[in-house]
Amino acid sequence: MTKQGFIAGAALLALTACGGNDASEASKGEGKEIASGSVATEDGEAQYSVRQDGDTSTVTVTGPDGQTGKFMSGEGAADFLPDFAPLYPGAKVVGGAGGDSNTGKGGMVNFETGDAPEKVVAWYKAQAEKAGLKIAGEMTTPEMRMVAAEDKAGGRSLQVHASAKEGGGSTASLIAGTQ
Image (tube, rainbow, N blue to C red; front, side):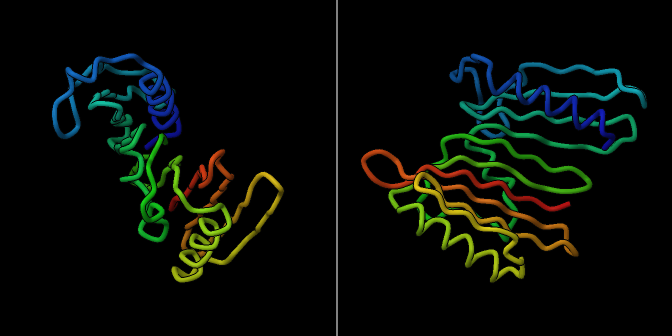
């Protein structure tokens, strides 16, 4: 997919994630189409389709070169997490965005869990190492824990931030993808 097609899809995803569509109109699967059309790019015309299914918005963009990218917001974003970076066990997804194209797959998922930030970050560190990623950095502050890991040769990366939630547990963000 062309850079312009990817940018068009990302812009549309941001718009649909903020939209106030009636979830009762959505159907099962990828939902009801709420918009479609084309966007002019430097390389030609990119086609797009926006579908809404409850709190999940899906944007599919096909660039002038025929390559396709799919972007999803909301709970469905966890579907785009690569195998080496699964959703934390028992986590409740509270938002995110993800996508795949002919050149890669990845997503960002925000979630909550009853576990402490230290436990969340330790679990992801172990997952990364088990998958052959190298720990690229760790950070601990009074408010937050973070780990970043990468496999430069394989084009894989992940980063997790976890913070203590008032009343116990954690809120966390996972960003992971392949190139």
